[in-house]
Length: 310
Image (cartoon, rainbow, N blue to C red; front, side, top):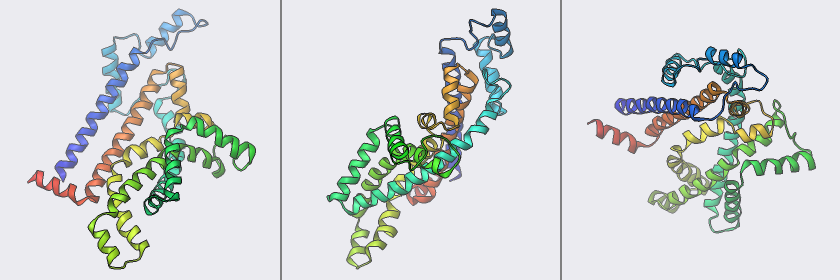
């Protein structure tokens, strides 16, 4: 098991290194100059490039950036004067994480519940209705669902605020919009996994013994149907907890999405790279944790690892 964990950690570190290197060089391919301005003198622009080290050869900039990255230094924002990228992430990430965590909880609870209902009522109207909802949830992007919900729940019915951040009421609508795709995906995945589990011999035996339906569903079918879904938790958690740039912009939420959009518009290279590397590292770390968790949940993984070590 120790060898398995070491391999996963080394793979994660290599992935982050490749991501950081690729992000750095791709930033250099973006056309434009972050300091170009009709109102700023050329001499001032040159001094700005010198101050941030953009006048040096690209490979020298790369070595400097990677060296700073090893010490947790993501540099200074070119447009947010005097602010480091780490400070910006520390300020905005808790907002995106809070939105994402609330959305993740909603998506998991509703998605798994809908999937269980679809499997139990297979071929009947609840199954058809919920699967249509799942297809629409995947097919319709947040930029379409968001305005519709804002108009219906915020303008027509006046149940929820349409923008802002801070109160519980302001969290409900953006969290649902952000998690709708995950709800739909979880519904389909849980339905498929449950239908596969329901045909297993131990489930048929449990029904033949006369066990209560709720006990069979919760203790046997649901528990064993979760194992194949654990592998998808890493990307799902990372994607939803980092928040959505579209949703945050739509509901005026002061999270990482706002800074990422601004950094691209302003060609703020350190901020673009810092946010990209932070997101990638977050995703890789969660995938690593899920791999470890999967090894403990599924006995077959542990047996495979033991066999490989032997």
